[in-house]
Length: 527
Image (tube, rainbow, N blue to C red):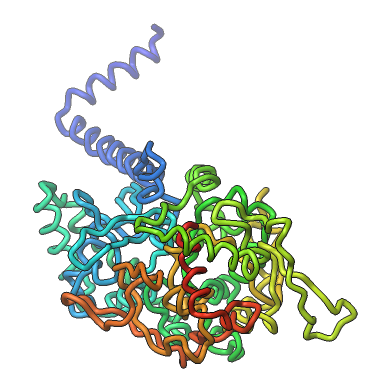
């Protein structure tokens, strides 16, 4: 060691021997270490992204994530607190909206959970629209059926509740955080100081602002005809993504509710025109677009999780009809079906191609073009002029929207390429048709038996949301406004988007004898 180094070392030794110098060193180093620690902790929180996963595919369908919690998720405990904090907007809790709760579950079927950026979040998944329940009588326990339309779930009511709650003065830290604390304590958990004074106050503020912003953008749609349980407006909400002025939509594009569809047996549907109006032939594109309804965006969608569902749904079958079937009457109905229905809806509930012996109907093209005759086929379009059903859904899917949809997922390998504008509704296979009531694309006819009558004889008013089954007319009980304190939704066919007209006339079987109609319904039970 040279003289200079010895002098420096001696100076340091002298400095460290002084108490004030040691404290000065501590005061300088500790804040730096603390800042580094906070930065590391914050980085760990912000990179947290772990969904609650399920090995069983059926549980994954009911409760697995599609990625929607990342961009749209509600903080889990705030979601649980909202019915109490905003009880005047939802007196019956989430169950009153038709959510299905299984024993031992805090979240309903159709809601998933993910730990994201330091907080547990929850949001909708595919099952919320494609799972429902069936009861043989009001006293029976509901049986959960996967893949059927969610005929009891009121999506419109759910949206209205969260928007009304967000603008309620009680949706504030003062009320929400104590309720979160109470709920957590009831589960044996504690709200930490950081969560109590930083995380949840910020979460309440951010959630309120986002919901109020979304409410402002959706406000024109909230003035449309209420959908009621089992229905949604598929494409008008999509127009928000492209900044369409919803308050300036043409009248023909407004009021476009449709029933949630069933989603079984996707493999034999390959190549068919999908969605009610047949606007796409690629199930993968349809599914990604449907995932927008579960809160996903192109950067946040969980493609692996959705891929599991797509694979499962290729072969998942509907349950068989659980009531007795009159074999003789069903046999007679099979002959009627082959004559009147098979060309458009397939040979049976499992064989979707039209049988070779069925004669495709020939119809005069109302446009007067040179192509004077055309034959409807399974999974193909029947023009609106022929089918005559409510055209609001068809018109809401405008050419302008088709053009904009082509830009979704731009830059991704799965960019939309197959959306098209059509001019009618697609002929659907009828697998599990007994569980798909109410009927027609907008759910305007309560039972199969009613569908075989001319529109003038179909119910002009019925009630949606009941899961008690009617095995005689084949559909869900729809004649009562309520039952056991539970209220059902009045479907008024005179309101825009609710018309029950169409699918009538000789070629659609509405001029058959009563015996033939009953026989046809009996055969459809086998699907």
